[in-house]
Image (cartoon, rainbow, N blue to C red):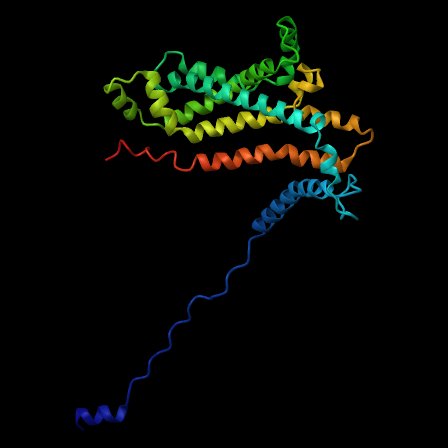
Length: 299
């Protein structure tokens, strides 16, 4: 029999079936992930509920301490608190104190952080740890000697005194943060400026500070928000209601209307939070391309 006849009689060889592949079914979530998700949801709800209460109560005509759908929606709460003595003057005082404290802290902090970042000193590490220790001092423990100092210097009911004290309490953390931001700026850029005849302060102003603008904004916002929400220090060091910031005006709000007017309190809280939200929005736009020159020394 020829080979061709054998091939015609046998036909094509059968193809063996492919081995079964892996199952396409995805394993279910682990119990640890489920518990973590539940915990995150609970934490989120605990933060969202007070915010929802403020928003709902501000437009409610009969707000209470509990969260409920208002029977009538109104703007009377905002019109009741939009007065000079109740809202506008305290907000202006808060803006002056917070802005002054933030600017003074950033300026002094940058001048103090520059030598710590650029020069090698013998007692640099102990000094840095001393600065870090200054951030751990509780403000309540310092208020008794600070109050005596303000009395002796006749600084009670003084906005410059409040600005100086809040700047002093924020300066240790600001120096520590600005020093770390300043370390990330290439020193080769300063050396090039020194070769062109620029001094240290000129290099700091023209080279270092523009490149670390996000760090300056972070410290500025940090100090501003701390001073904006600080209640204890202005409450102790100011007595004249015309010079008290909005954080203390919230406390006085309860006595103004006798019983707690929750709707008016919520409306005041919304107005009180607007400047900080505006500051965050402006800072996001200003810090867009601040590190555009960070790769200038690489080639």
